[in-house]
Image (spheres, rainbow, N blue to C red):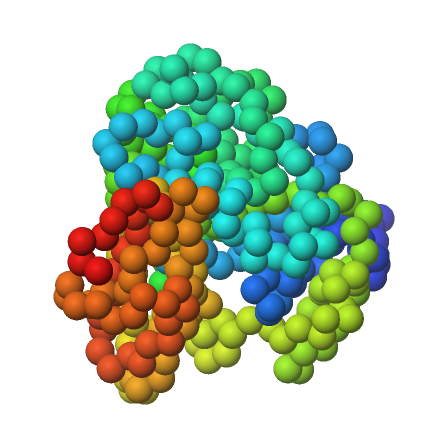
Length: 347
């Protein structure tokens, strides 16, 4: 008589390697990482990224706010892109220093600078934080070199799992580290709102979904926060950090029901436009709130940049890098940056 195979219960994970999607997906493959003083969810995608022995993590939600790949119609070369610089110089400091020091230097493949039009040559660069490559999302258009690997997480549900959202459940484009399929030097690779790879112009503002690697033996622990059991990094339990406020999870609705909730409770949103993004960027925990509530925004500058202020319709709101702004209608704020040596005539 035919017997069904025995299914053993999932073992309690002790390390990040145990929690990885390709170790046991039943465990939820999600760990909460200390980021800007709160616990942010990251997906644990694979236990041995590029056979370098480390565990790959990817942020569950997109980073607010959007930024272009390049400030001019020049090149889609990843190693000189704004997202690459933003993650390497600014975003990495969102983590506690003792965590950022544990993030592994990872060797990743990119198209060489002299080959962005024809994709003939590749190169390897070392990064602590980076974006994914098209092929890793099970896309066959991108063939940089032979050792890229398709990640099982995306292969098992190709398009829907590539769709990424902000914390208000709005899906948006997010940057990859590839180049244009159609040999245009000023277009580059991103994931569309439908989950397939698209090729926007480098100056268009899109979102970041950072990835990084940690050692496989990194200890994890289970905690209960706000009635929810989550996995956290054991070494940072002593910080007793709260979970990040994630609007869609706090409300507990999706689709049309969530849209109706937003309308009923008069939720509004702020968009951020960057002027001279080659000199800095903006971060916020959430830009969607009920009418009358406030959002918090932070302007971050590169080493060669300075912050010139927050503007609304060309009117200066504040020159402070940190802004608490009461939302009374849907609006677009402009964060202006400039090179340190420049003198802002508007001052």
